[in-house]
Length: 367
Image (cartoon, rainbow, N blue to C red; front, side, top):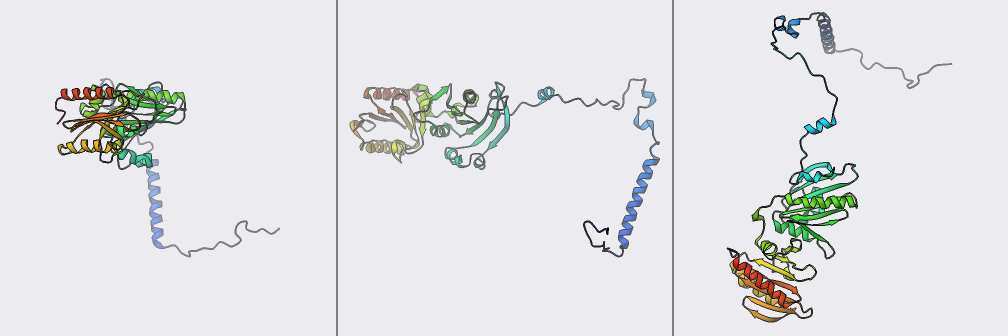
């Protein structure tokens, strides 16, 4: 049987007919160098000088050690030992107590600013930016089994107005708002949202479960450890929460379109009785030239829905034409305050009198 090439039936062809002298010289140098190195290694195998590697004999009985002659052998890896030596986990502004109950960090701390916030929350970034966003820290924690995870987003909104403005978007009539000392929060089956001072926190779990809900509420209560200076508390919030004793969970801030008027901005509201719609409001004017303008415009515009029962240059009592609720407003110095949607005019005037007395005792409130 005639044999034939398996892969290529063509005969091998030599492409070059001669080798250039330069290649011959370089090849010779490389081969000569390799021969010299191998020869040197063979000749040096028995050329051992104890003085260069061991201690001299004169030091062996003197106890003087001039060089290290012992190296500790490698030890088997110990997970426990290395955990003790490892630095404490970085939880940023959050207390390390978020890792209680055998929870651990599953994704290390990351920080975002106004330039790259969209990388984390994309389309939601504008919601935080327009409320004074400064920075955000993100960390993810998981339970010991790794089955439950919670992503923690901690936003620094610059001041209490910013955090209240963001938090207000999560408050609805059905929401159960809770408070723990200076922390106000809402818990659901898959996480929580809350605020403390200038900080707003959002916790998002990987599932809906009692474990996630319980841990989320625990973390929210730990927000009480976040830093807060006295200067972080606005004057209006101080009056509502600390002087009128309104639960912080029912204090809100509205930056614009107050009472559905585009000229009314920066008002604070507090609901003394969450079961009713009545609210106390307070606003501090920034410029003296606005004092007579804002008060008179508010009274004038409310006359479309309210009838005026009593009116003076700095005080007005008005009743809604259809709902019969009361709107009472007063101005003292640079502060405009009052009540809205109150069912009882007597209770409305009680809050006016209490607020007026508080402002009289607050030193420097007009500054």
